[in-house]
Length: 83
Image 1 (cartoon, rainbow, N blue to C red):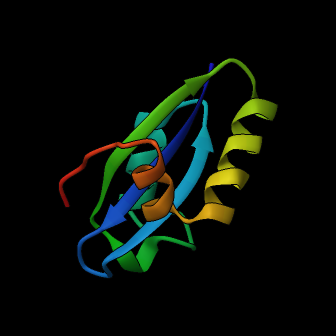
Image 2 (image 1 turned 90 degrees about the vertical axis):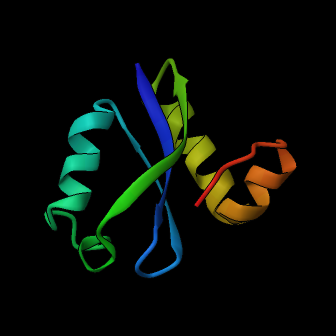
């Protein structure tokens, strides 16, 4: 089981898109500064997750979201979120 997730940083006002098989651990690592790409944006908040069956499916969706942009992707799927 794998997850694609979208995080939002209230301090940087930016989105981050990722994939993992352990969403709780991954969020902890993002917020503790253990991930170089997100250490300056903490605290991060999960605003969207989707569960997939394989890493290849997760990677494909993650890449699709990155190409589209997190905000636009969420609008396309009519997903409402609060920042």
